[in-house]
Length: 408
Image (tube, rainbow, N blue to C red; front, side, top):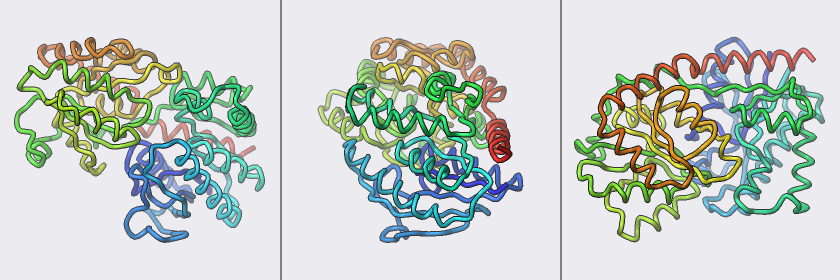
């Protein structure tokens, strides 16, 4: 088939979203499909167009046999939702205009987030008669309610809700990252038969327990401290204050360092909290190239994170859980929902309720102090990854749904 990907993020951008979609494009190309990717000039997560792409209106290139067409957008590092939305609209417009001039593919895979990419991609496909599959990793415009940007009665939200529902109903198929998303989307789409849950999976060869993390420790002067780490984008869903409060409660542990690896919209919140000076056991490394992330996981003893207590976040499933499991790293989290259920079923770590900093600190301490528990969680997480999280299985599911869409 000739498959068109419409996505706001793609390599060389780093982070969960671009890594997942780039890996899928390569996997389908290796299976003999002709892949064209319509995406933005690289700007994520820093919010600035990077390197040689800066100042360009459009760039077309070959990435391992995948034709990648990058169009201009107004990039912004601002965490303000209004500016992020303007940035998203700018890409949606340039991508839609460029998409009108592309050869018609057999089917399209449209990333359902950000919202404007979703709407522009669906509109382009409907206009050109291209059957499309929506890839849903987050719920928009529901997210606007979660962050308090507007209410469900707001005219803007109502308009976006209607447009999004129409695009869901017009899709030939819909793939959702979690069962929670599948349930919600099936209601909006009014057709559960075309909605399928597919975990994005992980490369079990790149992320594995036998890697050596000593070079990463040496590079950043981390010594022999026990490392409790958050690895990933600091997005609005994450409760950084609960995480930092948990770290503060273990400041008396001189052999333990809490390590944050990543940046994002909550960069300022983390910086402001650390600037108070009451948390002395936290190291923050804002950027590590994705190629080195497996060795970061190999260097840590426990992974930890917390989410804000919103209904939408109960269905959130970040790829950091997959990476931790594949790497054999025990997990301690403050959240409820899909992730806590997986931890309960797999035995890969511990969980406490939303916002429970004391409980999170206690869970981390328990994993650090109980070598047998830590080893058991590590083995259980890796076993779960091998049984359920091989990314080749997710590629099978995407390929099958796109082929069904093309046959319509």
